[in-house]
Every structure is written in C-alpha cells, then in structure tokens.
Length: 144
Image (cartoon, rainbow, N blue to C red; front, side, top):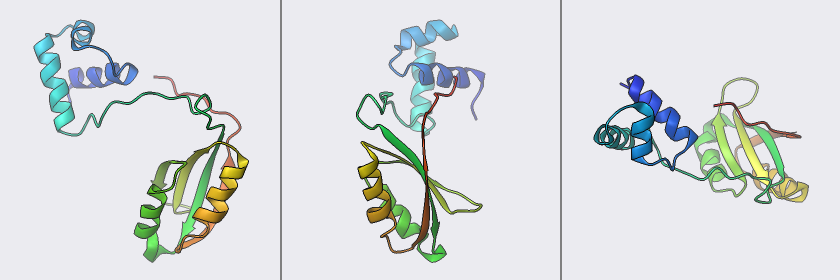
C-alpha cells in the first residue's frame, strides 16, 4: 500500500530521476533516512522499476513514428508477442481488446524503415492476420 508520502516521492522522481536524496527529503519535508528507506522499499517491491534518460526520439534520428495495430490468430499470441519484443523500432506493445488484438508504438529513421518493419517483419510473422499503420504527424508530451 502506498501512502501520500510514497506518491509524492514517485511524483518528484518522475519529474527528476537524478534528484539527490537530500533534495527529495527537503522537498517533501522528511528526513534523508526516511527518504532513503522509502525509495529503497519502492525499488524492492517493484513500484520503481528503474531510472532512464528521457531521450527526444527525433533528435536521436528516429523521425518517423507510427501506431501499428495487429489482428492475430488467437492461438499464437504468445509467440507473436515474443517476436515483436525482439524487433528493433518497437517501443511499446499493448495487448488490447476491441477491433484489434495488439497495438504497437514504433519509431524508425524514415518511411523506408517503417515499410520494412511493417511489411517484411511484422506481416511476415506466423500468426499475424493483418496490420493497420497509423502514421504520427506530431506528438505532444503529457503534462506532469
């Protein structure tokens, strides 16, 4: 169970994962020892899964982004998901209910790479019945 202090810790670390324990403790008006123990517990229990750099994909050369939806042969979904995890350019995989079975966020350098990823790699997988590609023209960052 997370209490209000835990949630405030998560909010602050989501904004700045490099924040020192001293700064975190000062912002939340708790002792450094309390901040250390709470962050350690959040890490040990898997609430905090890790820390990462927030990379601008366009600045990193991944200028083409798309959502790709897939319809699968239902018996093969585990194998398809395992293959999708191995593909370069697949950033996020969601197993969903509705008009399609899987939605992917993909980021690649250009349309040629997107074509290769969707037509050659994904559509060529056993168990994939069909795909639909939704090209992203612009993205905005959610407010925190």
